[in-house]
Length: 154
Image (cartoon, rainbow, N blue to C red; front, side, top):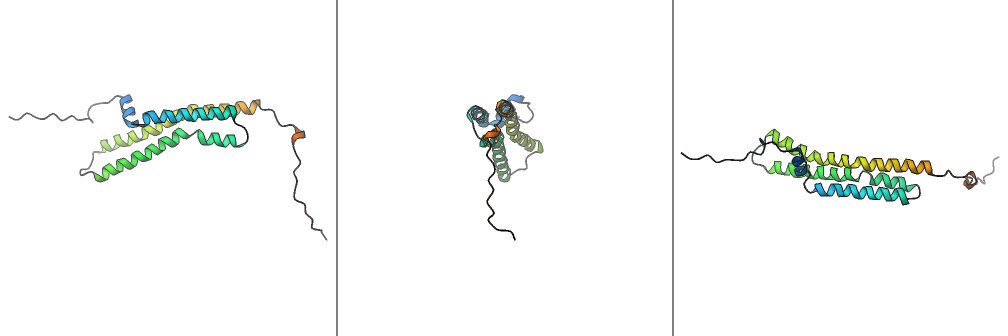
């Protein structure tokens, strides 16, 4: 009688949610929080030291950086998953496909969660600046100088 070989089946054993998220994030487990931390620091610096009307546009560009990074990793994961599927000799089970797809969307979910405090900081900081800013005095306003119309009317 020949002994049966024990083949580990990873799909039947349940995996903790934390391990699934860490495996799904991969290298983004470190990069995504770093991107969020840098975006938070840049927004805070712009709120404290920024001047001029372009500051709001710059903040709007920096706030969604974690979402940009997570969408980039989603597209990268999709491309690599489709590459593996294209080179595969056998047809994968649907449960394996959906496990891979759900792992790709974890990056976007974590990116959105990390973006919430940055958005709240930017919105609250801009409202605080708007409430505490002195309105311009009427004497500082200059009259609008329209181009002269030198044509004579008949």
